[in-house]
Structures are given as structure tokens and as C-alpha cells.
Amino acid sequence: MSIDKPCLLYIDDDDALARLVDRGLSRLGFDVVHADSGDEGIARIKAGSVDVVALDQYMPGADGLETLERILALPNPPPVVFVTASQDSQIAVTALKAGADDYLVKDLHGDFIPLLHVAIESAMRQARIRKARDDAEAEVHASRDRYAALAAEREVLLREVNHRVGNSLQIIASLLHLQANSSDDDDVKAALSNAMGRVAAVAQVHRRLYTSHDLNSVLLNQYLEALLEDLRRSAEGNRMSRLTLTAESIEIDPDRAVAIGIIVNELVMNAVKYAYPDSPGPIHVQLVGSGDELQLSVADDGVGLHAKVDPRSTGMGQRIVNAMASKLNASTERDPNHAGTRIVLRFQRRNEAATTKGVSAAD
Image 1 (cartoon, rainbow, N blue to C red):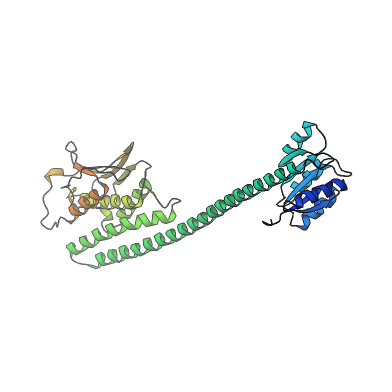
Image 2: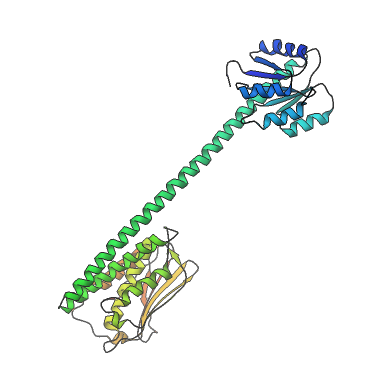
């Protein structure tokens, strides 16, 4: 559109009236182009540079309504003001429903030209508003598409990062496992096995995130089952044949899943070492949810409070459990009614303030 001199295409088979429109609107700053039929008008619009159209209803060949339909079918059609000599309001309604921007009744003397000027100015203004709106909507859609593409790319990169981190941690766990097997010192072997379990607990989260559809959460039941399977295959796996899990399908963020995994690893390894001095026994991990509160427990049917204190204990396991419980804002307690040892942690699905208590049952 030319801001200084917009182009009006006047489609009317009345040459005399067309000259009146030309004189009247040229004085008002328009470049007026005349077409005496719908076909000629369509051809002129296709040629370009038409900013607004005034379209007569009654013409030989295609009438105004037919021509209007053809104009609006063009790519980026100009706004159209429908003009007729008929006083029939039904024509106005039909034209407006068909897509005309405005409608007015003409006379043979050109007295309608000031009204035509107002109508075409309004039509062009509305066209500019529509274009601005369409451009804004197109930009919104384009921005959404760009955001979706960036989000997809970010997700792929995060999956790759989690995949590589998981693989690296798994290599570290394997090296610790090999080192533990090659050591003749039981204390060194135990320390390396414990370290391997802690590394494996973190690695499992990254493996879960690599295969998950949602990188912002981890299914705890699946994660814990995989973690316990790792423990079953660990250096002391022959003593974990009765390690079981009961867990509801609960989603939680990856950082909290890591803390939970490390706690479970410490408590399970503690039960393996101290609950059954003579022979392996059952160890059960349970995860249940009630509203926003989660409860995690690790239980055995072993010696319980009668367990002898191992002089080799460093208290590292206890410190790790306390640290991870603090990260979860979890309360931690021993179940006094359980015959063996049952450690219970209660915490929120989301990180909310809660009193953290120490636990004395972990190594």
C-alpha cells in the first residue's frame, strides 16, 4: 500500500459515474483506476498495487456478488466496499456476509462520493488492523514453532547428556567392582562395594532419564526396581536373594530420586551386613503415597536392636543417610514395633520444609 497515494480500483460499467469518482477521490489523495467489468477488475487486482476496491453490484457478465467472491479468493485480497443503486437492504446483508468491508447506495450525480471516501478509508484502516493482527498471530505461531524446535533440541541434548553421564558412572561402578574383587582385604572390599552401590544409585537415575519421555521426573517404582537389581548383582549379591520391593507408581524429580536411591542403597547394604549374621534373610523395600506425602521403608527380620556394634564401622553410612534425608526434608525413624529393623522415611513429593531427624540404624 502506498501511504502517500493509495490506489482505488473502481469497478463499474458506468463510465460517467466512474469519471465523477475519479475527480472526487483524486482530489482527496487517491490514485483512481477504473475497470468496467468484473473480469477486468480481477485482472487489474492480479497486476498488483491495488489498495482498496469499490465494486458495483449490477454489471454485464459477472455481477458484483460473483466478482466479490472471486476477489476474496485471491491471495491477500484488498478490502472491498460494495456499491449499488438498489435500495434493497437484502443486497447489503448478502454483500457483507459474503465478505465486503462496507456497503453504500450510490446515486447518478456523484453525491455519494464523500460517503464512498469515508467507507474506503474505514475499509483500509480495518485492513491494516487485520494485517497487523494476522502478522502478530503468525509471529506467535512462528515463535511457538521455534520454541518447540528448541525444546526438542534441548530434550535430545539432555537425553544424550544423561546417556553419557549414566555410561560414565556405570564404568566407574564397574571399575570399583573389579577393584573390590581383586582385593584380599575384606575392609577394602566392603568399602569399594559400598562406593560402587552409591555410584550405581546415581547412574540409574541418568539411565532412567535417558529412556524417559519426561526429563523432569522419574518413576520411583521403576527406578527402585532397577536399583535393587543392581544390588542383587553386586559383590554381595549372593546374600540378597530375598531382596524384594513393593512400590506404587510415583513420579518425583530426578534430584530427589538420587537422594532416595542413595538412602535405599545404604539401608539395604546395612541390613545385608548386620541383620543376618549367620545366613541371608529377607530385606523388603516399600514405597507408598498418601496425597502429597510419601513413605519409604527398608525392613528386615534380623537381629534388630540386639545387633553387635562392628568395631570397623566408620559411621559413613549413617552420615550419608542423614545428609540425603536432609536433602529430602524427610523425617527418619526406626519402627519400635518391628521385630527386626525397619527404618521409615516420610517426605513430600515436592521439596517442602520438614523436621529432619537423624537415624542410628545405618552403618
